[in-house]
Length: 248
Ligand code: PXP
Image (tube, rainbow, N blue to C red; front, side, top):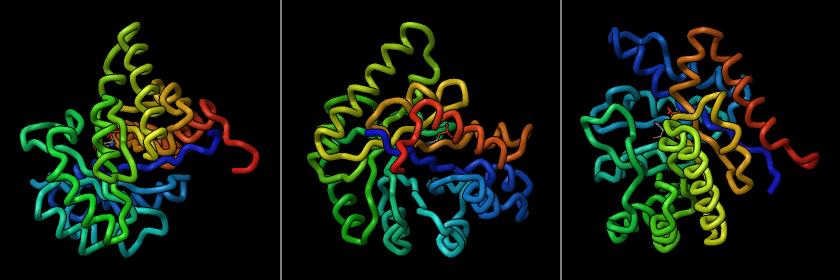
C-alpha cells in the first residue's frame, strides 16, 4: 500500500487556550479552516464529558463550516451517542475517558466490552458515520474490534512516543504487527497520540497506516512557527517517510 497517508489535525488545544479566558478567542473553527488550507485532510475534535476544551457549540460550527471530513472523538456514553447521532459526522472515534486524566491515557478495552460497544458501532454506522475504535496495538483488541463490526481501528502510539531505544523499536514492531492484523481483518488503520516531527516517520512508514491524527505537538509548535508552517512541515515529514505513489 503506497497511498498518501491522510493527516487529521486535532484542534482541541486551540479550545483549551480559548477556554483559559472564557471568551471566543482563539476560535478552534478558524484553526480548523487554517489547518485545511495548510493541507489537513480532516479535522478531529474530542468532545469530552467535562467539556474541558471543545464545546457543543464548536461541534455545531465545525459541522457547518468544514469542507473536509470531521472525526468526532467521544467516550461511549449515552449523551455522546445522542450528540453524534444528531450531527452524523463523517467519522466517530470512540475513546476511553477518565475525568482525572490529562489526555486519553490508554486504548479502549473492546475485548472486555464487546456487547456494549457493538451497540454504539451499530447505531453510528447506521447513521452513516465510520466508526473507529482507539486501541492499543494488541492483537486481542484488534480481533475484538473486527468482531463487533468497526470500520477502523486507531492505534494508540502513546507508548511508542514516550519509550526510547530498544523499547521504542519493540513498540514500533508491535504497531506494525497490529496494523497488518487489522488490515487482514478488513479494518482501516489509523494511528495517533504523541506524534511529533521527530517520531512520526516510522509510524507513517507502516504500509497499512491510512491516517494519522495529530494535535498537541502541532498546536505547541504553532506558537513558535505558526499553524500553517507547522502543518506543512508535518505533511512533509509524513510524505518523506512514505512518498505518495504517482497515481495518488
Ligand atoms: N487520536 C486520539 C484517539 C486521541 O485521543 C488523541 C488525543 O486527543 C490524538 C489522536 C492526538 O494526540 P496528540 O494530541 O498527542 O497528537
